[in-house]
Image (cartoon, rainbow, N blue to C red):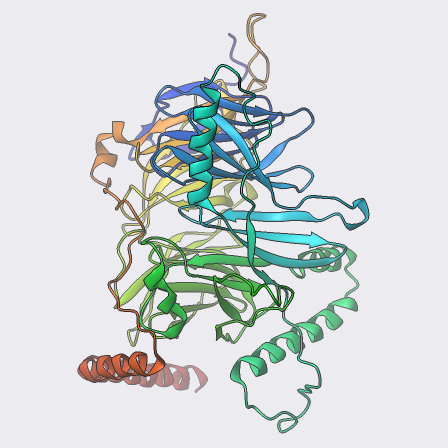
Amino acid sequence: MKKGKPDTDMEAACKAEESRVEALSLSRAAELPESTNCLTCSEDGRYLGLGHSQGLSVWCTSSLTCAADWLEDRLEITSIQMTSMAETAYLLGTIDDMGVARVFAYHCDTIHLLSVVNIMDDINKRSVCLTFELSHGGQYAAATISCNGAVWLEVHHFPSETWVKELEMVVSQTQEPISSGDLGVKWSPLSVATKIKPPKITAGTTLEGPHAVQVTDFLTYFSDLDVDTRSHQEKEQSFDTNAEKRKQTNESTGYCTQHFLLPCAQFPGDRTARSQRAGLPVAVCVWWMGGRNLLQYLLKKAPKNEPDVEPMPDMLWPNAKKILCSAVSRCTRYIALGLDNALVSVWDRQYGSQLSVVSMSAPDCAISRIHFADHWHVSTDEVRLLLVCKSGAIHRVTTGRGTKCCTTLLTERPKDSGGLPTTSASVPFLQSTFLVVQRNGKMFLQDVVNKTTVRCLIPPETHLIATPCSPVYALNTKRQTLFIRGDQDSSYSATPKEDDGQSHLLVFHFGESDILKQFIVSPPDSPQQEETQSFVSLEQTCNLYLQQRALSVDERNTALAQTWKQLQETAAETQQSCS
């Protein structure tokens, strides 16, 4: 094989740091199916799910060999997720290039199609699945559906335990001499637990003037106020002469972001947790593009006699500015929101109030992504966040209840567009470490506490990271491994025996590096949950809340004094700057 270039762009970028940062070399590689668009990994680390132009495949991570395929002509999988449903059964959720969402099960070296989420019976009412997310454990799935200009969120309840029994029955039947596999198998149907539509102003309500509406319902008032604000923004944007910007705004209107929430604290909204298994969600929080409100809905089946009634949110958290991005801590107690005007809001579900509001004073700090820097540790005193700005700068924010906020610049704004971070993901098995992929294909591990680059990740010189603007990768927590797709470098001429342009699965095993070993942490088997009690009646809930308030009076007084001191210092600084 002949070398076409002395160095790849990524190697050149890393050479400046090689004197102080050691590169982590490739551990293994395997040939991928044609047009592999997405990867996912099971929680136990045993299997990889691959979506490609012919369907989907499940690979064994130890041998990098195909364990099972589900193939169909002219069906290209563009999104895939995997979660453990039982010890030997796994759920896979996919979306294809036509916007059809499907649910599969991998069991005993076979992939079974369990259900199609949005079946298109009528071509004139073609529904498209925009996003599809499985909850941990496979009890629920959230699908954002678009049809004829309308967008809504469907939360489906899966009969997981029944599916496991049916899968075991299919295995016993296929062992018989006369068997037709899945032919004739009627899997138990999934059900819609909640159908959530974008909020609308309540009929007969007017928000003009300070006394035009009687505020008798907090939830209804802030919901209507949010819708009214969004409508005014849309009217202003309709006069925008920038057609491309107006088109992008219209296309994004109506999209939503959701997060599954675990049981938390003592409030009535979480009392259903008593009947739930540990680690299973009890609610979902939702915010709509262009909106300011964060809404929480309990996961419960719609009443049979009123299936079309729109559910009302059980909790509403209003914010001062438009929500741009969000993140949830692993225990789901804290919800961090990146807001317009460089604001950050952190909500504490246990107390139903804001933990902190942070105003970023740095210039060009339009927030595009937000993450929790501490993946496993959750402190009731403070949280650490990672903010990725549109300019490419990355900030670390440390904040808490009644404490002074601390912001640290981790990465400056890049000098050229090639250095823009396209992916920033927490590495669960490395303490306070993030994987960063840049537009130029450079990959590295960053210690967000010490502001250092721990390792550069360099693929073989014959390959480049595929689509660095949207890399195809998966992190294996159990095996402490990164799987990422690499395409053959066009600057290398292949020999006649080799397939030109073939993609490979590149494997980086972090446990092979001595320096990375000091960062490795052992994650718990299930999402961390704080020990709290659940009560059925509102009276019991209020009694416990008042008891905790009485026990924490000294702590709250200290926090109040710190907050007052911080306000005085800020007022003094503002007065000096104005004089």
